[in-house]
Image (cartoon, rainbow, N blue to C red):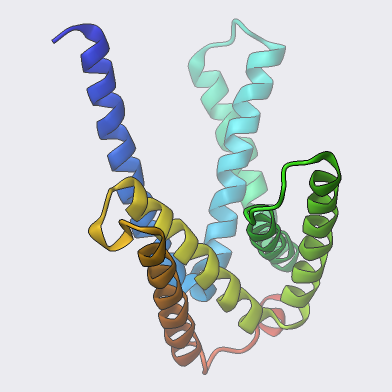
Length: 203
């Protein structure tokens, strides 16, 4: 086996591994998205800050030691994670807006100049509308967005894993509908006693 074959095999194994991890995270999002969203947002802020901090150090001081880059990344990541935790509703606005806009951009619009501009305009309008709805009606909107987003990620992951349940276009659509419906039912039933995100976290 030559190096090219070894590289291809390793790449394939990594693709399967990440697809499996993505599938697990997608199922968590489908059935517990509302409960864990604040933690996801904080973790996302931390990861973005860590990568940004390391990149800034690399750009300003290319000869800096690795531990310096890691340390700066950890500090900036911790700060952004804390900010994301504190400004939770702003993060919810962005999260729900991005999920809705991504759904619009994934639609099969014609790839012409006019349609491309129209898609961007529609996606921007949907981003703002979904974000505003998520702030004013946080629980139902977050549950819907997390179920839809998680189901989409789960179907994509199963397709990459070549799961029989996602073998054809019809099967993928059916699987997506079942996952969204099940996620909505489970989340609405298991979070009935929870107050709205707005009242719980804005103090």
